[in-house]
Image (tube, rainbow, N blue to C red; front, side, top):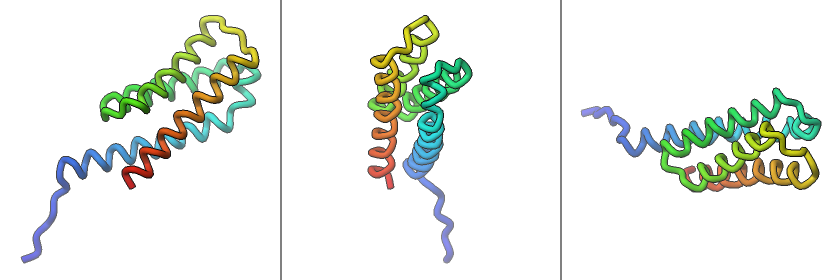
Length: 115
């Protein structure tokens, strides 16, 4: 009489994807708050940015979210460039902050699409 509905594979995937998107958006919010430290060249903050971008890249690949993966990969690449000795000039910092915003835009697009 009362049937218990078990979530389908698609439902589980959607739930996991939404969880990932929300957590990654929290990471992006943290990145936004730390822009002054990034500009100052704080190594620990750059490490956190790189780690969050790498984590987002891996999860996006597993969830087959290609455009988000590409955006996060670019952000991780910029952090790698910083540690390879790139000058923190206006052009580089603009690229880094823009990459953060592009990840945020893609996250918000996906959240709107799945909600």
